[in-house]
Amino acid sequence: MSTKPTENLATSVDSVSRRFSVAPMMDWTDRHCRFFLRLLSKHTLLYTEMVTTGALLNGDHERFLRYHPSEHPLALQLGGSTPADLAACARMAQEHGYDEVNLNVGCPSDRVQNNMIGACLMGHPALVADCVKAMRDAVSIPVTVKHRIGINGRDSYAELCDFVGQVMEAGCSSFTVHARIAILEGLSPKENRDIPPLRYDVAAQLKADFPQLEIILNGGIKTLEACHEHLQTFDGVMLGREAYHNPYLLAEVDQQLFGSTEPVISRAEALARLRPYIAEHLAAGGAMHHITRHVLGLGTGFPGARKFRQLLSVDIHKTQDPLALLDQAGQLLEGR
View 1: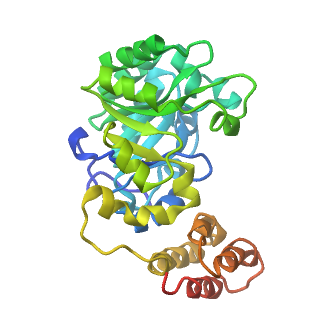
View 2 (view 1 turned 120 degrees about the vertical axis):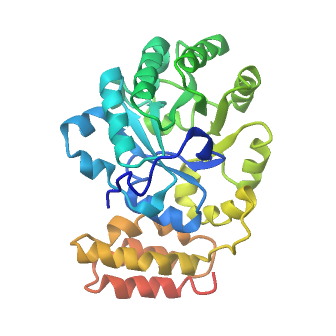
């Protein structure tokens, strides 16, 4: 469902909380995943998968920008390096009611490098600044940047400060920092998430040297206890793969990080609330696994968890009655 700004006006910089967010992840944080995660936490800021400017300008932009109204607060992450194209896509984001638009300066894959997208842009801070300025001139919603602490060949702290400083001068006040460098040759995207060491100290120094900026920490964070610790230094934390593989972690985010007094939703209740959404998707001709592939992480750490995952990952492709199978899986979550 695509929303229009008549009912979901994009919010101002101050009203978008980045205290806790789930990272944009290709092939994972699609609209179905985000709908599910929103059932677990009302306050978490959610990000789309990265969408390239070319896909929006030359493809079916309504398909890429589509989302359910319940997903707010919601940010669109863009991949690109042409200021005019990014400005046009930022306008699309605002027109569709997104709460923020984010520029990807962190993805290390060869495919995006060849199109001057992602982490390679850390070597071109003036271009990133031009991109940010063009986007900010085009929209009133916040424009933010997600980046690494460096790339191979440009990984000194002075170069990181030069990058942040130039982009800040272009008007960006919120930076999400993946606290690893990106090695642009010889490592896969997966290896770039594991092999370069985490340097929280570098990100902390950046916050100390740019206290006026909002600095969000990303990379290797796995528990809410760690979130509490990092929030003593940083303005926010962003979780990626842990939030996807262990989504029930989000169930306590509102209470622990946002001061909510509402009861924590159970696994069983989360799946029950997802059922009408799945039924609507099936009625429209969709397949249940489009949605339930994102739910497998609910099945961890209790008797019957393996059977839960089997039902929704293997048996789902054999059944003639997917909703009955969903209900069977839900029974395994009763009391959990």
